[in-house]
Amino acid sequence: MSYESLMQQRPGVTFSEQGEAQVLVWASKAEKVQMEFGGSAQPLDLEKGEYGFWTLETGKLLPGDRYSFLIDGQGPYPDPATLHQPDDVHGPSEAFDLQKFEWTDQDWKNPSMKDYIIYELHVGTFTDQGSLDAIRAKLDYLVQLGINAIEIMPLSQFAGNRNWGYDGVFPYSVQNSYGGPAALQRLVNACHAKGIAVVLDMVYNHLGPEGNILGTFGHYFTDKYHTPWGDAINFDDQWSDAVRHYFLQNTLMWFRDFHIDGLRLDAVHAIKDFGPKHILREIRESVDALSQETGREHYLIVEMDLNDTRFVDPIEKNGYGMHAQWIDEFHHALRVSSGQERSGYYSDFDGVVALAKSFRDAYVFDGIYSEHRKRKFGMKADGIPGHQFIVFSQNHDHVGNRMLGERTSQLVSFEMQKLLAGAVFISPFVPLLFMGEEWSETNPFQYFVSHTDPELAEAVRKGRKSEFAAFHLEGEAPDPVAAETFENSKIQWNLPDQEPHQSMFRYYQKWIALRKTEPVLKECDRTGLSVEVFEENKLIIVQRVWEQQHLVAFLNFSKSSQNASLPSEHSAWQKLIASSDPIWNGSQELSERLDEGALTVPAESITVYTNIINS
Image (cartoon, rainbow, N blue to C red; front, top):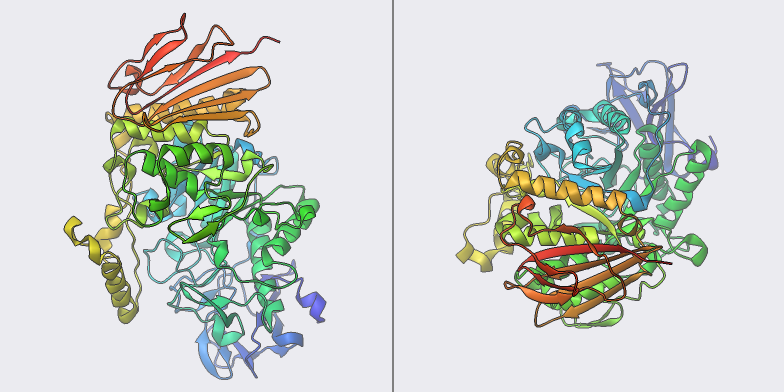
């Protein structure tokens, strides 16, 4: 098979329509590659092709069979492109036929990015069962809330049963303790039937430590660059063509064979690629080609610690063409505005001033000096539409990377929680919720792993304690290896039936409905937005205009009421929502004199009015 043909084939085991297994392995370091399965005493030899690829066609390997590889007589090793590891990272792979599933989502259409209401969840802690199948039982709840897109934290196989997912070592696999690849296909099909898109969190910047065997097969890593997690993945060094092929085909597999609607690519600033075409741009081009073929639209969303528009600029402007990015800076400014600590990377953010800037400019640091970094940082995001930015008041990172993993519900008042949520929904950006925040979940979300290597587990335990050594007055860092840490992080499904959690749920439900029905909120338009900030009063006034609708929001982050005025150019202002209202279990009533345009905004509250502009 030619080099060009090999680069068009998905690595691992695929099955033809006649049921014959076609095996493709990249093992550039090997002199001999063999495959063993079915308990046979004699392994099968793979044929060496161009550029370190090895191939085999056999009718003996069937779906459900366990198999592994021998590299120069050493092993056995799992398949680098395994779809299923039923016995954890160290066991054999299981052959899985992706084409056998009977999809019923032929009429499914991925919502526009601007219409996404994203709900981030972790499979293991979202339900008591901690499985993909168990999520299906919660889909009606998500529909009732108003969610139309779930974002699932990484599913790639990791060691043990408990992990955030960022220690995965087989990017093509679906975690065995979550149910494996068949369970993911069932979930996606069920989500589409309920009108919910599925975004999968993928890690293309590193692989986890335990069970990481890719380097045994080929030159998957390079020592030219280093990441916080070790050697970087080889996207631009010698032998990098096959590595790029591995990740390109991985992207296409999720979209084509699992009907995933979007990928959230973790920490892309740690992807080191100085070749003539960045791997992200090549991924976007490949996804566009797939969409042309299938007629289905798929999104690429990035998390990055860079305020660099090159990532989201379109390809025709020499960008990488990512559809959207997370905006951590909006979160940081929001957190500081709520009165939380200004330590570490939060030290750069001066509360409501920074938040007002993020409302206007998306990036807070857009070429200005950062004291935390000791240099100028970022660039202007002018002209980039709001739907390319995703904002949140909580996510897995900024909860779980705290020493005790406290959620916002444990850090600020009930009233402030409602204000933070309103700030997200009033923005001209795409909103994201973290599981349980909609009912003010009280359980923490802590960092947990279940490495089976005792030395590695102890190293993680010691590292976590060392990281928070300066915080000993706040207590001990939870043991990340303990099962209790994982169990403590599960959300409590009994809470929405109790107050004040029920009121918070209805409040979120109302905001989501407003995002879907009010044109000025539905459109992620940045051009019709203006922001005033009153630093001493900790008050922000956001105005948004879309066509004939004018909206004004008063965000009071102070602990006392603040006087404000509605714009005088229109009459007949109507209150859209006020977090302080008794219906939302508010603590104080809004005082308003609409005939004079005056109102008193209660402490720690958001109040929103709307009006129709007469033409």
